[in-house]
Length: 117
Image 1 (tube, rainbow, N blue to C red):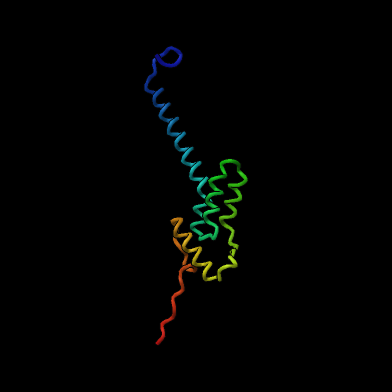
Image 2: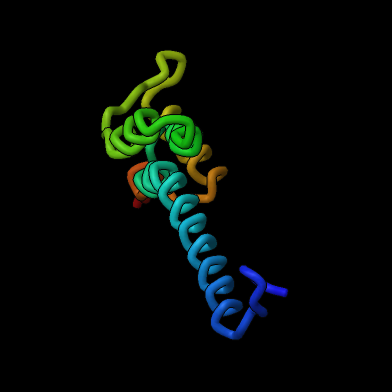
């Protein structure tokens, strides 16, 4: 017996499949949008990429943290740890971006010493 005392037909099952696929698509879109700030920060070699990534995922609690993470991912401000020189800071950022699975921009790669002739 189906809904309202009538047997379920082909279109009823097709409707259920369509609803399940729609729900899966909405969930995939939601997960994509929540991870977007972190992926942007990693792609841009942001010095605080992991913090941006975590804040983006925690944005599901409220919209404001996700918006802040999205803006922060595009912020180009360079924070230099006073315990390291700029070269040391570049190296630390390079290691962090590689750990997070991103590709390092050329400006963060180790400088090549000029050849002496």
